[in-house]
Length: 319
Picture 1 (cartoon, rainbow, N blue to C red):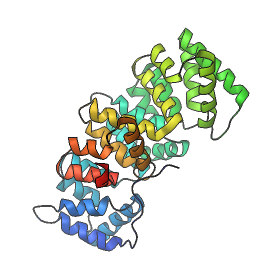
Picture 2: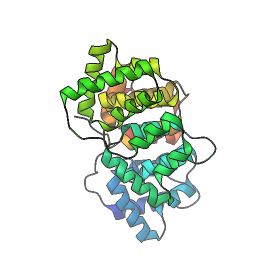
Picture 3: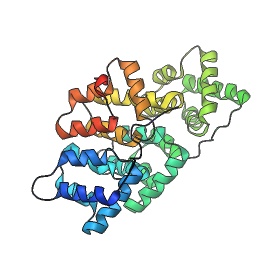
Picture 4: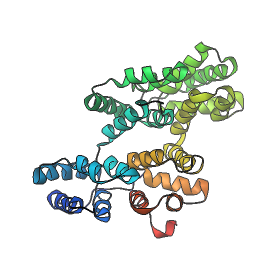
């Protein structure tokens, strides 16, 4: 069983929280500790109720006030906590695509890991928030087989729960050929299997692949392909195998290979906080020896660090 780090607060009083936040945001300074204590200790549904209460008490938009009063990464964390999950995904995708470059890693993280239901809600939120079509935007901002694979994922048509051992052996053969031949047609067949089969079915396929080729699926993809196409395929395989371990790996590389890539760290902590962040922390510790808590403490500072650690629900013994 996977587990998050943020749960609904008991004895929740949205009006009182709204008034405390109002006080914290008033005047010249800003009580950042109060913001952290309230917003990281309530679940997302409760935060949305606080925002409604805030609107009725002050006649102002809480997200607007947070954006105005806060700055830098601390602002990104506090504002990020206020979006419902589908809106947050939509927000991250929009910002990854607008502007000069496209942030491919953000597209990979989100689209390789979300369920059909999450993808459906994210597309709706994207359309509402940005009066834009997520599929069309991805199509215009990416290219090649990387684009084809993203376009397949964003349809959210992965089979759920279905397994067929006989078909698994067949699909494994197709994957193996695709790693030998590498034609456009083979790449298409490869991504069709990885994007549309259920997680349970893909488990069987990867086992069969290992039997046929004597090679691990990830190693085979790394050997045969390159660029963002390869990164996306590997992300899908890792998510099928163990999604929390995938996010632990993404956090580790964001922290250590990219000199603390703030956007990635913030996005994963917020997006997974009520789903599997506690499990991600466990995988991180098992795999890398140091705790996520320790690594965040090492790289971040000030109220930004405090907010991230609060979302991690870290304890002193994790240090």
